[in-house]
Amino acid sequence: MENIKLNEIKKELGNRSPNELIELCLKLSKFKRDNKEFLTYLLFEQDSEAGYVEKVKEEIDEAFTEVSKSSFYLTKKGIRKALKLTQKHIKYSGIKTTEIELLAYFLSHFDIIARSFPRSSVLENLRETQVKRITKALNNIHPDLQHDYLHLIQ
Image (cartoon, rainbow, N blue to C red):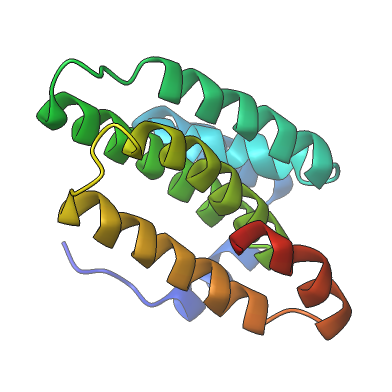
């Protein structure tokens, strides 16, 4: 099956009735959990970004409580799972300030766990990559906001 360009899909959706659009969205949400979660964000949480960030922070807390510290392998696997969750919610939002807040929150938990493995180049690289992402997002927001968020990565 060939993928059709987004512009063509947009035109076709414009030709559909509201009831058909509702049915298409419901079918789409049944196929993949991510689609349903994204639709939930768009419909119910997009209007209150601060509330959304708090819910995601609670999920990050929960993900880090599940991280096993019995071996480096399991710890690394748990951290990557928490990072994947964080990145998924950042992608849903698409707002740079949300990205900065969530990544900084992730790093605050990450630093606590990473102390148990002080010479791990894997964890150091993972942390550095996230700091680079925060710095990149900081460069794309208003200078006044940059100053407010700068303390999160120092």
